[in-house]
Length: 543
Ligand code: F6P
Image (cartoon, rainbow, N blue to C red; front, side):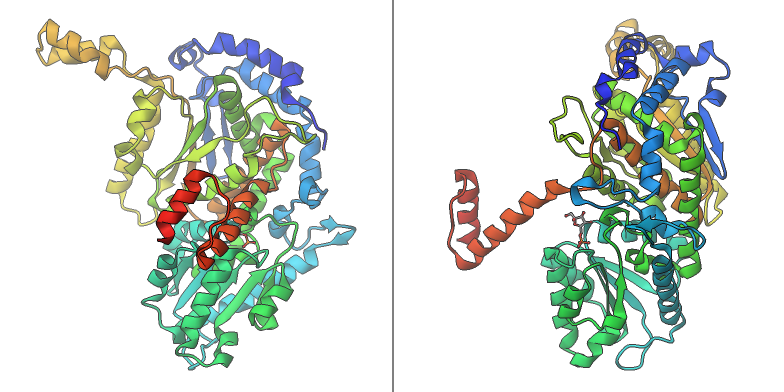
């Protein structure tokens, strides 16, 4: 991969000049001047309809952003990504979560070896294990079938599986799936308090198998389990997903019950691997396969489509436009379905752990903004919470609105109300409400001129707030797979253009190191050197 400082490209400098023209313009004017705008700035692909016309861009902006991608050698970088080159250079690994969904006929090499047979072998293991558990053939130590599954993991070993199982709850079978992630003992005790050890299956998910939270929770759960079950029952009730097989064995898991994963799959992109075992158990293997199929289709779209019509590329470039030229700091993600309520949390890790970097690929401090802050909640709940700030606050918050043409329970009355809000919000954000409009509304209420004058400023909406609308036919395992892969590739494109390494996460290490030092001090009641703030807080805690 080439290391190109984006700010030194010709396109960047032209974008800087172009920003001066665009910044004062209202999108209303852009719509009024061009009746084809909403068709030109939209992409229809499979069951997806992306409308990005409600953005503060013109065709010139689009062309300059495409030029930026070209100058930053995005095409070549995509080939390196899918081709298995070690693009995660600081950890010396390729980034191949795409191989997990590439299909059995693909050939993808790591160090000269085709990894696909291994990938297919693990998928076959997930399939047979899933079928045995779902159909009740696999039994616990007293001969009962499993009713409950507990996924023990954190970060990428938790957020993806939680988000997908929540998103696909409509497709869920009889198994109850629970998640334990936080090292907070109240989390694990709250989850296990109502569980029956005889009918519960535990999946320990940890790529490294050295994560404090996961090992602590697993140990607590195993002790709880052994209070009623004999030692030999552990092999029937505990399975693990990890790339550190030796450590898993040390923990006492039967080697038969280990689902391997690989160094070339990053934790936050691993739900497509055996890390997604809880997903497969919750919704059945065929739905898990459909999820992979959706992601594969998005991979193909991303790899093979001209950048001008390429969904992840367009989303990434627009986001760079706001981040680096408008100075926007965050992006909101508003799914208009309660099922996707964990998508923002999932994408926080995927986006912020990936692109929260301030050193470029040459190892030099960057002097431009990188990673965006992601946040959000489902609509319409979010409308009654933080939309005030998006509509009338001082910050520019570009937002993605994700909606579905059909609901799952087919309740038309609800769905029409939901979607009316979905369309209304992006229109309101675009149009705003002018002083004249507010005035005439108040005049109709027969208010005095003095009262009108006093009220007007608070009721004006500037509008001109950018949104992308992603309208999808229906929430299915396949469309969800496409949606997640879409954001994965958006993250990749941004990392390439910002000239950073998106696939390491050194920034999480310092806190971990300090926590283990402080833990020792707490346990031995022997405080070492700290800044005075930390020291006094620790004294208060220990006393
Ligand atoms: O703390 C960061 C992190 O390394 C994430 O990148 C990862 O998803 C998470 O911890 C869990 O790691 P593991 O799967 O190795 O337990």
